[in-house]
Amino acid sequence: MVFEYNGGWSMHLLDTLWSYQNLVKTANSFSPFCLVYGTEAMSPAELIIPTARTIQGQELELDADMCAEVRMVDLEAVGEIREVARERIRRYRQQMSNVYEKTIHERVFIEGQLVLRDVDYVRRNVSAPSKFLPNWEEPYMIREAHGSGYYKLAKMDGIALCDPINGKWLKLYHA
Image (cartoon, rainbow, N blue to C red; front, side):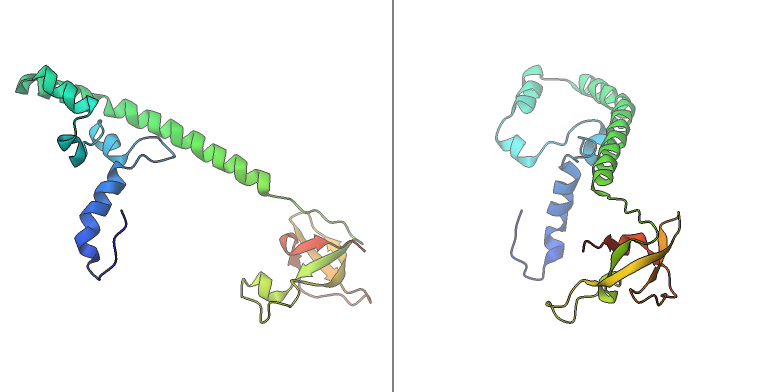
């Protein structure tokens, strides 16, 4: 649903909440409404344009007792639906974790290697003063390498930098 914004956002709040509650979520393949009530919500359009679900209910001409019994069966199945949703969410999170881990490139440097260091504004996540400035600083030499991923650097003329730097801010220098 797309509306022009005229300052009356509160008028569209119910429509937005209804659509959110009935939208099937990617992680668990269920809508929030289904996870609470055990059945899918019926949209107002289904009352006007018959669907298989509404036609089936009309053909059976269920009485009140039969409707209550069907509703109780739906409510008893909610626990199973929630367990299925939990399992799907767990698998979905594992898949997302695997995809993320594929993008991670662990950088391990050894003493004596030449590396480039991110400039200060990149490390602080600030926009560059000019788009033509480089993102990497002059080559440095690894003075000390520590197993936890931080390094101590020295300039090419041998002057040691006092602050250690995390390996994620370094990249190998190819001469």
